[in-house]
Length: 106
Image 1 (tube, helix red, strand yellow):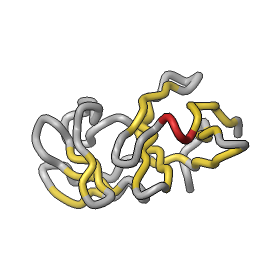
Image 2: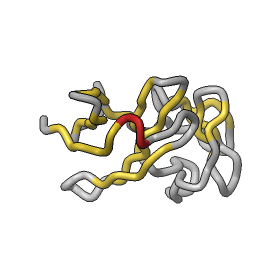
Image 3: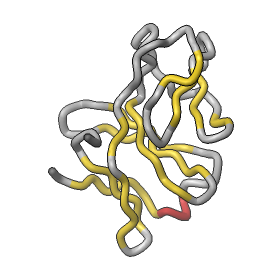
């Protein structure tokens, strides 16, 4: 497992996210929820479209096309039309910099 430097933690405002791509071309959204950082695959399991552009509400990302919701902490679907969970990735803060793993959480 390798760690990818994303940005300074202070650069990702609370309630916002930043897009990062792994070396394997997997797009991840790195979200700041109440000062905690989470990483979720940037893909709605309903139609395989991007979650980027969706808003964060109550610790969930809302798909901008059809309104499916996913828990940012677990990747679990919380509202249809999606029914399959999406991958989340470990995140850590090192010297004030957000880093994300290049492998999904177990």
